[in-house]
Structures are given as structure tokens and as C-alpha cells.
Length: 545
Image: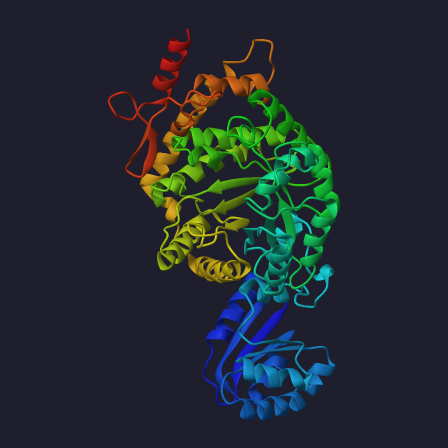
């Protein structure tokens, strides 16, 4: 185990930064020794020799002129250690840090603007801030492992013009705000990229950046080749899925695929395919990404949650997502868990719902099927008032950290008012990072709440009933009903998978009614009381008979 010693030099008594630095060093596997405040040069050098230090951290946060003199004297006195290979780092206020850099003695100078994950990466021996792509991992899994225990950060971004989006991507990358820029592209690009005859000029830029050629994607990716070299991804489209997948792989080195099972088709009006056909096409594109070793996220459960489906349907759809991903050869599966969907769900019941998902899908993990947890704030949950929205962003992410996510999908605080600008995203990422820092310092275990655990048990039990009911819909000859497009579609047609917002939908029943009880979203019967899945499904099957 390597050893690091650190202290504040001279008359400086400010050591909060050093304490945080040493805390991160412990996470990175260092043996740490805190020397304290106002330590003389001689004491630091003596301690370095005595402890056989590999790295010496020095801090000074007072007058720049005095700091420059002290650090110069320190560099001269410590030259013998320097020549023997001992490393030296400095931390202080920006004015003092600027002068420390001019000495050329410290291998790394921190001025307080660095994020915790940047400092941790340095302590883990990784080169950050060097200014080249090699320094920042360029695949999702490598980036996750590189930042551990910090989650990688993702945000949706796309302006109604190419020029504005290119400029914004450069700003986001330079600010090192995100690990993943999730390109928001307009609806015509998602549905009609290969069909210009179907595109409507009046809709250009509706919902995101109007990419129309592979060169557009290449330009967007090139704009991100700076700062911390963020990864890039986008949605898998609503038509020509594999043709688009090939474009994404070639042009933006797509970080991962995001695709649903039941949506982005005629059922929600976002694509040309019918329900059965779109399920089959989605399964094909899962398989393609799996073959090409690209992670896959099924952004399925929140589509039910945002339509006020009961928690159990949310959980069942999450299980079906992971099950299908594994069945079709996905190796790295990103389990997306959108909190606050519906928005009136309580924090406790949100945590319970997500824990129930993990309880059901974790048994699917194997050597060839890894699950990575991604959390996000509810898309429809933000208040319009900006200060309240900022508070909601912070509170939601703090709650999400109870699940120790590998990816935090930041949903910007401006969501209720306007699509996030680059400046909005940078601000949101600052808030998210502070929350994550607080949580990783020592968050209480909120999942241990008995009420949460009781709800987890109820949801997993009820979800298994629903999953078994879906299996029973398949012909006896079908060996795997949960990946059978006709069976899955029939579960929607009959209303086993249902949501109140689907009323009058040609593919779904839309008869289910839900209500919030004690913070949980429950299916209710005709009297307004919660109904079990056994009773609800029995009624559906009796009506069908």
C-alpha cells in the first residue's frame, strides 16, 4: 500500500481541503497520514522520510506572496526527496495555486475548482486534465470503472439548430460537466432519417437537433473532442433501427443503445410500426448491439410510470426489459430507474419500487450479462419555479444515491420551463456533483426502513403473479413466452399491462384505474380500493372469456 502524507504549511491553519483530499486517497487505496495545520517545512520533510511517503500533499490558503515564498523554500528543501522519486502535490486558493504552478515543482496543483471524481482519478494514477482522448475512457463500462465510486453523469441535450447544438456541446465538454452527452434529436431524425420524402420542413428542430446526414452526427461528435472528452449517445429511433445503429456506431461511437419494448410505434404515435412488429424490431436491434458489444438500456418502465400505471406494472416492465436484453445477447445491460413517476409517488415508495426491480433482475446476472444501475429524476416531476426546481433536483438525486447508481441521468432543473441550454446543464451538473459528494461521504441507509422493505416484498410477490399470468397467455408450444412478441403484445391488448393514459388506444385497454395510497401507486377496483394482481388479472381473463 502506497503512503501519502499531507498538511498545511507555514502559518496556514485551513485543513478542510486536505481532509477531503486524504478521504479520497483512502478510497483510492492509499495509506494516509494527516500532519495537521501550520506545519513547518522541516516537519513535513522529516515525516516524509520517516513514513517513506510516496506522495506529499502540501496546502496553503493565505496571502499569495507569502505562499509563493514558502513554497519556493519548501521546494529547495525537499529537492533530495524529489530526486529520489517522491511525488508532490499542492492544493490552495486559485491565486496561490497559480504561483505554485510557476515553480514547476509540484506534479499536480489543485485550486479547488476540480471535482471530487477528478481528484480521485489522479489519486488512482489516472491522467486527467491532460487534454487528450486517451486520458478519458471512451466506452461506458470503462468510464464507469474509471470513476468508481462516483457515478458517471449523463444529461439530455439538443437545440433546434445544428449551430447552437455544436456550440453547446463544446461548452459542456470544456466545462467537464458530463461524462455522457445524450443527444436529443428531432422527431424527423428519429423516424425519417432515411426517408427525406417523409420529412416535414415545418417540424425541423421539433424536439431536438435536426440531424439529417451522417456528416451532421460526425460534426456533433467532433465538437465533443475536448475538455473531458465525454461519451455520446442518442435514441435508437422509431424506424430503420439497425441502419441507424450502424450510423451511430460509425459516427458518434454510441455509448449505449436506449430502446423500449412496447413503445415508439403506433401505440404512442411515435413510429410507423404496429405493436407486435415493433416488439420484434426492438428485439432485433437489441441483438445487433449485443453482437457489437455495445451496452443496451431499455427505457421501458418509466413510459408506464409516466402514464400513471401502478407500481407493479412498472416493476414487471423492468423485469421484462432485463429478461429480453439477456435473451437477445446483450452483455452489458443498463437498468434505467426513473424516480418520481408518477410525480406524487413518495420517496419511500420510490425507493421500494426500485429495490423491487433490482430484487427481480439481479438473479439474471451472469458472467455474460452484467447489470449497471442508472437512476434519474422524473421527467414530469419538476415544479415551474426555478428555486423549487433546483431543490427538487438535489433532493431527488440524493434519494437516488441510496441505490449506489453507476450512472446518474441528470434531468435539468429547467425541464418544466424549457429544454436545457448548455449553461443550464453545467449548473445542473454542479448541483448533482455536490449532492453525490455529500452522499458518498456517508449517506444513511434509507433502504433499511421497515416500511420500504415491506413494500419491496409486496411488489416482488405481486410482480411474479403478473409475470406468470403473461407466461400463461402463450401457446403451449412456445418455449419462452416472455420474449414472444405476440404474447407480449397480447398482455397489453388484454390489459394485464395497462395504464390509465392508454384509454381509447387501439392497442391497449386503458381501463385500469390507479390512485396513490400512502405514497404508492396502486391499481384500484370499482369501489376505489386497492386490488391485488390476482383479483385484477382474474377479472380481466373472465371478461375475455
